[in-house]
Each structure stands twice: as structure tokens, then as C-alpha cells.
Image 1: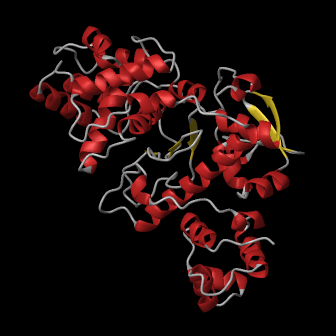
Image 2 (image 1 turned 90 degrees about the horizontal axis):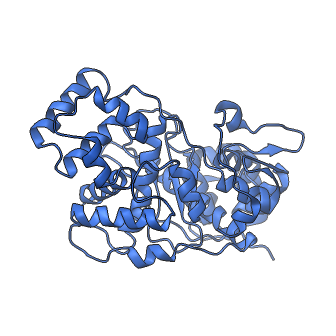
Image 3 (image 1 turned 120 degrees about the vertical axis):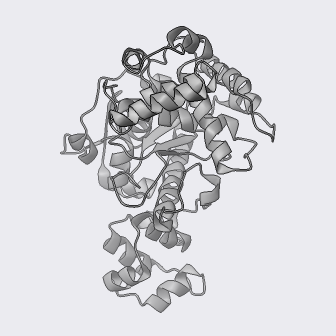
Length: 395
């Protein structure tokens, strides 16, 4: 007998920002009954599940999934005092649904984690990490990812995916709004899973910001696996420092930047390293290349030129492919490293996720009788380094 999980109603409502009144209006189920179902006072029966599924355009199987709820407090999503609770709930709900889907795909593909090295190097120290400690951890991470200990990271996204970390664009907070959101990424450092998930919001961001966001969330997976600093600010500062060290090691920074480096000179450094000018300036300050006075001067210049919001020098956007390959291999066919074809009706029922989310998370899926997915039409793909299906199975 199929059991329907009332927690999934709550999850769906958070994700879609749907009120109980909306459900009542669209399904004909009374508000009192919806409340009793959610609170497990009355059983959640198939007829009610079907009504909700039809109204919300969700697969019926969504309501049978038994994933463990993800408390927002476990996630690295940053929020300000002005961020609406419904936006926080939407992000945590989507991350829960996304990570559960990745787990099911990994189980179907029998993928085993190769990330035990994170367990080995993740610090247990409860006090504040020093800049030197963070730099050393960033170099160790480069080594385990098979990257050179010096020089730019050619493709942050691909480096993480090859190691077995799923990097996925999200819907929540993906468009500009008045919510005053401060975060551009999210992960769960303490979640035990074969394939950790890094979600990134604000998909319209520039290539340099997205590279930094992904490195920042990668930092949380290492630095905050076993520890959580006493303040959110300290947690974020540590992740910022790690991202800077990962993208530009200390030895390289000392060679490329000096106390006399002008703002214009940072343009060529950005072009060569794929790092935002603002991030380069902070990196220089963190390792003592520039003092507080010079830092302030450069930041004032950034603001006066309008570069704080829109920096010059375009950095190519990196597009993810691991989730696309996983879903294509498990539920259809991975036609190429950058294209997977699936039966949308069958896939959404098997995974218990609306196809519109699967399509977006995969950065575009091809359907039977349809050449391109919705997301791909809106955001054309860049040229990507191929990863074969055999490589995927070894992740």
C-alpha cells in the first residue's frame, strides 16, 4: 500500500510560496482538512494527493517520497535581517528536494564517494582559523582535486564536478527582487551523502562572481564540516578567505599584486585569473600585501567608477554538466557530455520532481520530440570540456 507523506505538502508550499488558502481555492479541499493532514491528525489519502498534484502540476510520486527534512539552520545560505522568511524557506525547500534527487540518482547509478579526503583535512578546531591555516587547507584542496598548487583554476565548476560534487543552478531567489537576499550559493556541510550538492542562486551573475560563489560554498564543505564558528560573520569570512586562497594562492598573489598596484592594473589580473577585482583587492588585504588605508582607497575608487556593481572585463560563465549526465544516464540517454535526452513524463514520476525543476537543475534537458529544454533556450551554453559516461561512473 502506497503511503503519502504530509510533510511533502509543507515542502511544496515553501518551495512554491503557496498559502493554505491557495491550496483550498485550487483543490476544493477545505483549509481545516489541509491543516489536519499536515499535522497528521487525519491520514493523507491518494484522492487528496491527486487533487494537489493536479493543481500544482506536481507528479503524484512527489508526495510518496520520504526524504529527511533539511533545517534551514544547517544550510550555508546567508540572509540579512530584511530577508523574508518565505525566501529562506523557498531556498531550503529547493535544496532539500535537489539534494534528495541527487541522492536517488547516485543510488541508481551506484556512484560511490571519492571525497573521503574532505573528512581527513576538515578542521575540528573550534576557535577562529588563521589566514595561514586557511591558505594551507586551500592548497590541500587543490592537490586533492588534481590541480596545480600555483596558477589559475581553469574551470572551478568542472574541477568540483570531477571530484564528485554536484554544482546546480537553483530557481529560488534566481531573479532580482526586493527581498534583500545576500547569498549567492548554498550547501549543507554536515549532510552525509555520496554526492554533496552546491546550489547557486542568481544565475544571471557574471562568470567571476559565479566562480567565487562556487569556491565559497566548497569552502563551507571543508571548513565547516565539523565546526561552526560562533557568528555568521566569522563563518562567512572564513569561506571568503578560503575562496580567495583557492582561486589565487598566496605565492601567486604576492607575485601579481603589490602595494602600488593601481585599480586599472587589476583589470589584466582579473582577465588572467577569472577573479573579480573586488575579490582580488580583499585577497591582497587578507595576506598583508596592502594595508587598511590602501584597501579603503581602492574600495572608494571601485565605488566612484561604478565598478562595485558592474566591473569591466568579462569572465566566461562556467556551466555545470554532472547533474545532466547523471539524469541522462539514469533516466534516459546521455547523448553527449552536454546533452541528455529523457522522457519528461516518466522521469518526473520516477524521481518525484516536477520536470520544470529537473530541466533547470540540469541546465537544459532534451525531451522526446523537443530539441531543447526551457532553461537552455534562455541561457545558451558555453563550450565545455567533455566528461564521458565511463568517467561519470567512476566519480
